[in-house]
Length: 373
Image (cartoon, rainbow, N blue to C red; front, side, top):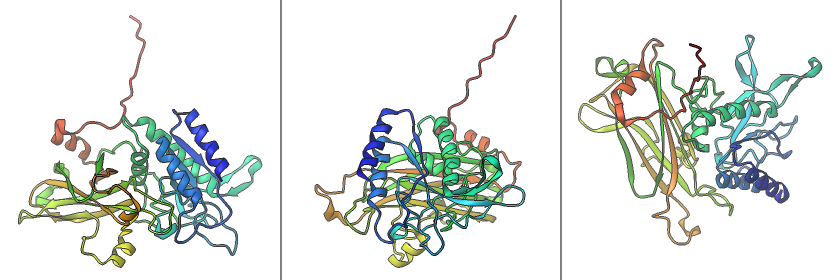
């Protein structure tokens, strides 16, 4: 693959304005269970070097072969896309039976997204392949990038995952299809999406406080609604064996109790959680952390305020000369607060409550109109 990678490096450098690249091509074999492929690793390196989004098909499997995604779909920095069928009215439905699926090496959460993989071709013939699904996600990724004031690959990825239609990760369809909201860069009236990025270092707790809850979500002293957190780390990685990611992110949305203490609303398991449990149920060492929970009966609040807490951890420090304590690693956060009532004006209430502390992350359209007097 060195020739192909060198070619991609030159082409991407020659087209700096192209920020989303669709790769509907895979090697004809499953990725290794424990080691990221050299192809996948180098694709991640290219993505980080040029600041671009790779959207990669998961690959197609043949009868009797292993199901796991095929390189370069094991690139951690990419968005890997598997297939889904449509239901009787044309909505996204069940997993595609021929798409390769997760998990990736060391339990990597691949694919992240899925979309329609069965298409009607010229002449009326139908064909099914994950290579049809990936461009649909590439299109939305490109629109998302174009509509953000300060886009980054991980922010685009996080917003698409936030818009995915499944509450939890599934090894066949990832987090689902980015259809809610239809425009991932915009909040619906009954929800608010806020996002930011921060370079963080180890051995420090980071807090983002003063997140005011909209009145529509806090009736009777309780939070009633849905909260979703998507956190993505641009991890420090290596290709020298297992333990591919040397850094991990712990992130939690917290609320203040009646006793005045901060407690977890959604987010990472407690630090004291046994390693095996945290790896199995919390994907502890994976760079993507997604947590979503609904509170139909309400969560009692001490104050109508939230905060986000984050912390960076390292392992295998001996691989890196010069120490890791002051090594900054970029984390991206997307938080969505949503009401169950479509008539609630959550977005506007949040903007009014936060005032000058927040700014719109999207590019507002400029409409020019010729007027004849």
